[in-house]
Length: 337
Image (cartoon, rainbow, N blue to C red):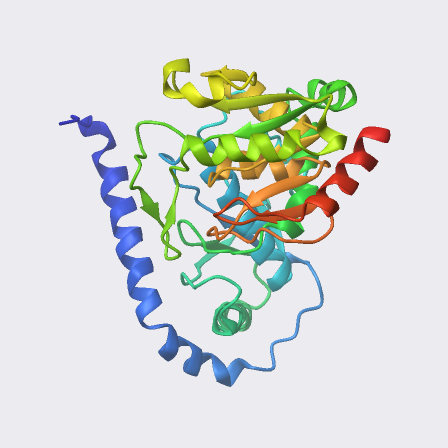
């Protein structure tokens, strides 16, 4: 049993209360949507200098989860026409992500703070209607005042891809930005991320989509075989990034891949993002690297975030099937640059 320090008790109780409040908001969403209909004529004139959006990012979540939350807030700010202030990443003390370089400065002086309701992700049309209604009513009520709207803990969002540019800019502005650019120019390898760790196991299913986060080594071995059979990849080193020891990967150890185990987290993310081809695991960590990357991405579906099957994104099924010809063409163009 893990003993938690008493000094964190108030924070932990507040986070639990936030979770219960969010769950309640999800149940009353139909009522909130009906209530918002009276404000259906919401009009946005773009980012308004007197209205801002911030969020609290879960302080105990891993960095991939925290980055995802930051991006979710950014995308909701775009939808609502609010100036985005972001939130603090407690898991990034060194500044791998310099989000202050891509967000606005908090307003000085007296402000009015307004909490927004937790809503489902953007695929539910009620979500944007509810948030727009709350923003409009607050602007009317506090007309002439500077307002900072606050998203609840862990705001939901499905499609993060529209925010890939701002994420890349934040990494380039961070303490490893120069390393990232240099690594991209000199990378001649395929990166495969395998999600492991004490927080998951072989029957670990997460999210409403009930995704198994522990993908078997055998599945990854078949992906390695498929990639090696494609001419464009014949000369590329294959690196596998994971937590564990070589004995945890007996099949891959015999296949001549380079096992990069228990590496420095920030350095690993930069290497994942720099690869000529990145193969994702069901992990916000490697998905963060994918968003920052400019290379082709091979992503297993279904997942709890949107993985496109267009442009540089190629979907891979649970059985390991993917569009080999399109992927080969993507990587061929990347290697020839």
